[in-house]
Length: 185
Ligand SMILES: Cc1cc2nc3c(=O)[nH]c(=O)nc-3n(C[C@H](O)[C@H](O)[C@H](O)COP(=O)(O)O)c2cc1C
Image 1 (cartoon, helix red, strand yellow):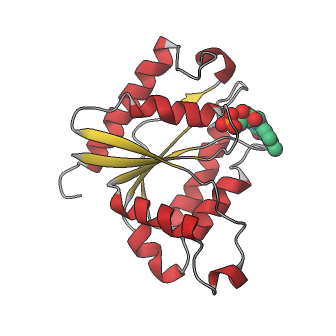
Image 2 (cartoon, helix red, strand yellow; image 1 turned 90 degrees about the vertical axis):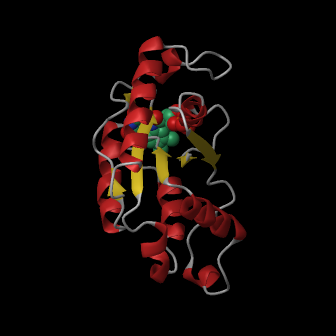
């Protein structure tokens, strides 16, 4: 069984990115699962907090990342870049720095995202790449999923109703799972 962890970079109720992640949990290939994690409860990074001990929300998310075979970041786009709240969570996961290798080093990560605009988080996804590279992940670039015009692809309950996006998401997940399972990984 291949176990992925998905993290939505949005805190808001009715988040398109959280809805996209929920849809992804139902489109995984055979013999694989996608668990949903949250960045809720993670404080703003502060070294003075860190030296008192990692906040519980950070430790829990770190443990979940380490336990997964691969991690899917589902990112909004803010001002043509990645959201600060999401970056803040990843920054916490990289503390203490001695843990970076264990949490991120050589580990498969992939990025998708949804936005109500026309470009579907492409600039945000690109902005994540130097972060993932710095942390030493194996960022998967074999597929790309940008979901523009998000207001049109989900129904009022948050279900993914656009058949083309469903198929793109299914193929993206199959490709990422194959990468996670690649020989020698
Ligand atoms: C501070 C801020 C900046 C934003 N900048 C962009 C942007 O550059 N590109 C874009 O497509 N959407 C932008 N948006 C709109 C978001 O894509 C939209 O709020 C989206 O719903 C956020 O994702 P969520 O639904 O998962 O919360 C911005 C929103 C905020 C709050």
